[in-house]
Structures are given as structure tokens and as C-alpha cells.
Image (cartoon, rainbow over all chains, first blue to last red; front, side, top):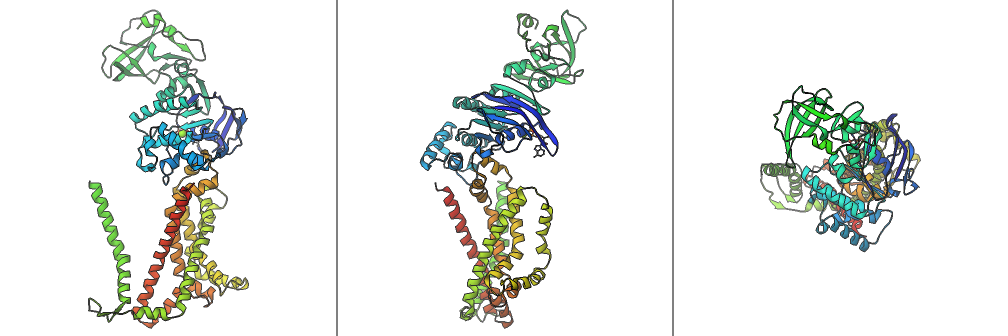
Length: 335
Length: 268
Ligand SMILES: Nc1ncnc2c1ncn2[C@@H]1O[C@H](COP(=O)(O)OP(=O)(O)OP(=O)(O)O)[C@@H](O)[C@H]1O
Ligand SMILES: [Mg+2]
């Protein structure tokens, strides 16, 4: 998939003006960005439900910018499952094979439908109706219904946001494995950084109508190219022109002691959580108006004023793609 | 538990209200039509007598007017759907110039006395040969029914947002296909109410039928109303029962049609 100079505006109000992005076949890209930045609009453009003002969309080398949504080999999965309530699960799943571009015979349809229901672990639910299924099961049926037509590109618009957290974390792993096994090319929109990293081979960060950065999850996470990306996707603190990963920060009691090569910023402990066997402190840095989470084995109390110290060399200037100094021995020893 | 009890209570209340308002009057009407010498203060009639029904059915006009009523009602329902469905769909889904004007125009027939409009239309309809026959009456019945049909269907389309059409489209189905396979089944409640409303409105038209039909097209109300002056309560009661039964029969028939449509959809 390749998108060039895509632009769209509603009644003269520009949502985005010059989007460019490329996605290789078989890869999954996670799209993150603040609310209202145009993620849904972007997916709607690609699926053909909304026409862009200008720009082109290519799929497998063909220009599909002017193709009707029903003719595009693209399926969009909405936030809600939108299962047809008057049809059984099997009829829902096989809808695209009965009324879509490639119409199959009833027997063939049902065979395929049952096979894919088996794959989403709902093989015995074919004769049920949508309202008899839980939210997670409905979302899985919607996924099966989307995949059965064999789309060249699958678009997912926050498909799990209506699910409760525990269900959500189990289904996303499952979906990732499923999409990878089937070799589906997909574009996945989410608000959740963790979800984006779990599912995406690539991350695209969108803000103010343009892609701020695209790249592998660890690349974007560790090397944000701008303060926007740092704020949205990375963990740490960011200054005007540089970024400091959270793992380079050490919490110390307030002192005026100066150690060479290190810098100090003041912070306030907000609260502490235990996770993965470690304690994590949520801190607020008043001078930067930012929050950061730092792990420490030392004991501090909520509301304590502390120092965050870091090696001057661990600060990464933005727009620097070669800064790979973290996790050097020196940085580790200094903790 | 508490929720459940509340619901049962509400349902009971609703059933009671329904019984008081519809079932009991009809039942008494029916009882009255087949009873003999049932006068106040007697609690039960002194005998059963089907004289009133005989009187009603002895009138040779009744068969013709029953047929007319049903044919007109059915045709009015069909034409209403043919016109109201696309109209309501466009009003609900598309933005276009003059949309608000059309919407307010749709209330006009409810506000302005239909009689006045019919008077105005009478002369042109005579010229077009649309008086004194069934087609003219069917046409004029659209006047008091279409606004309601369009409003009911529009409310139904509004309730189903555009997501369903889009979901169908991304799965590769053409717009018309999605309309017939998803939207129409989901619209069933609205379609049912619109059909019944239109049928009942058409059923109770007297003046419009009289003016445009010129007395040549006789419907049930045309022979029912004159009976009021006869003061034969049993005969009036039998007519009333017939009147009440027609919509019920219509609803049953309509339901059957709906069911078979859904069955056909499920076939390969
Ligand atoms: N039909 C429309 N008419 C006018 N403006 C619209 C329309 N749809 C979206 N917008 C505007 O486009 C912008 C982007 O909306 P979009 O739904 O794409 O955001 P999003 O990134 O998906 O947000 P969220 O994360 O909250 O879902 C918003 O500012 C919104 O107001
Ligand atoms: Mg959105």
C-alpha cells in the first residue's frame, strides 16, 4: 500500500493536507495519535467511504483513489462489531461471500464460514444470533467476517476499545498471531501505546494532520524524532530539542551535591505502583510540566520532593538517528 | 430481581391498559351485535341473536364495499411505500438544498384540512378522469397518508445510522444489495407501523372518498355512517366489529409477507 500527498478537508476545514506513507505486503502498521487528529478519517479515505480532496492511494501498484468502497480489496473494521442482528453468526460471517464481489455457492460459503469460525474459536456458535455473544466474541466474528473475503488490506479502527481491559489484552495477542499466520497486510488504529507495539511491525505517529514519524516500534520508542512523538509514544522526559529516556533517570533524595557529567532535575513523587515485580514511581516534573515513570528499589513516599539525575551523554537530540548509546555498560553502572 | 419485578409490573400495567382501551370495547361491541334484548340495567343479554349480522350482510352493497375498502387500503399502502421509502431515505441520508423546506411541507397536510385540498383538486381530477373511480380514490387517499408514512419511515432510517451501509459496502456488497438485505430487515418495526397507520387512515376516510368517488365508489364507512341514524345499535355494533377486525386481518397478512421475505433472504 502506498499513499501519496493525501489531503482532505471538511467544509474548508483541513483535517490533513499532505500525508505520505507506505506499507509493505504482509506487514502490520499501528497508527497512534491524539483524539481528533484524523486517524479514522485516514482509514475511511483508504477504504473509500470518504473521498480525499486530493492525493492518490495505491494498492499493489494499482491506483484505487477513485474506486468505489465495495470494489476495493480493502475491508474496514469499525470500533463496534456491527454484526447484522437479524442474521445468524454463520450468515454474518459469510455475508461478503454471498453478496460481495466474488459470489460463492451456498455449500462452499458455509464450508469457508465454518472453517474461519473454527479459527476464531467460535466453531460451535454458527447458529447463534449476535445478541447471544459476548463483546469479545462479537468482535472476533467481525474479524472473521472481514477476513473471509480475503482483503489485500485490512483496516482496524480501534477494534478493541469497547472491550474490558483483561479481554482486550488477551484478544490483541490473539489477533496479532492470527493476522501474522494469515499473512494479512493491516493498518491498526489505537490509542494505546502498548497495544500499538504488540500488534504493529511498524508504528506511525500522527499529529496535526501529518505523520510525525514512522518506523519499527523500538526505533520510535527509543528514538523519537520530535517532542510530539516523545510525548505520545516514548517514555521519558523531553526538552525543547532533545529527549531523555526514562531508563536513564535515577531517583535520589534531594541534595545539592554535584557529580561530574550528570545533570539533575527536580520532581515530585505522585504515587507508586508495583508491576512485574518492581516498584515504579510516577513523578511530576514541575519545571517541564511533564510526568514520567521511573523504576527504583529505594523507598520514597508519595509527595516527596526528589532529584532525577542522568548522565549528560544520555540525552538524545531530536532528528538524530544514530544515537544508540543507551544500555552501554557505563550507563548501567551509573544506576 | 427488583428490575425483573418492575418489568413484569410494567408489562402487566400495559396489558391492562390495552385491554381497557381496545379489547373490552370490541368484546362488548361483539357481544352487543349478537345479543337480543340487552338493556340497562340487565347485566347479561336475555338471548343470542344473529339478526344484526344478517341485516348487515343482507345489504348487497356490503360485499362490494368490503372489497373496495380492502383494495383501496392495500393499493394505498403499496403506493405509500413506493413513494415514501425513497423520499424518507433521501431525507434521512442526504443533504440537499431545500431539505428543511420539504420537511416542513410534509407537516402541512396534517395542519391544513385535507378537505380544503381535496376541494381544490376536485376540478383538475375531473378533467383527468380521476373521479368516480377507484384509481382517483386511491390517489386522493395518498394525501392524508403520505406525510405520516414518510415521517415514520424517516424516523426509522434516522435511528439506523449510516454505519450499516458502510459495513456492507466494505464487505463488497453494492448499495442496493445492502439496502435490501440489511436495511429493510432492520426497518421492519417502522415498516410495520407505517403500513398499519396508512391502512387505518385509508380505512376511515369518508369525506375524501365521497367527494372524489362521487358516490360511485362505495367503501365500508360510506354504508357504515348512514346506519348511525337508524339507531339500530346491534347493527352498528356488527359494523364496528367488522371495522376493528379489518386492521387485525391486515396486520396478520402483512406479517406473513414480512416473514416470507426474511425467509427468502436466508435462502441461497
Ligand atoms: N463528517 C465530518 N464533518 C466534519 N468534520 C469532520 C467529519 N468527520 C471528522 N471530522 C473532523 O475531522 C477531524 C478528525 O476526525 P477523526 O474522526 O478522523 O479523528 P480520530 O483521529 O479518529 O479521533 P479519535 O481518536 O477520537 O477517534 C476532527 O477534528 C473532526 O472534527
Ligand atoms: Mg477515530
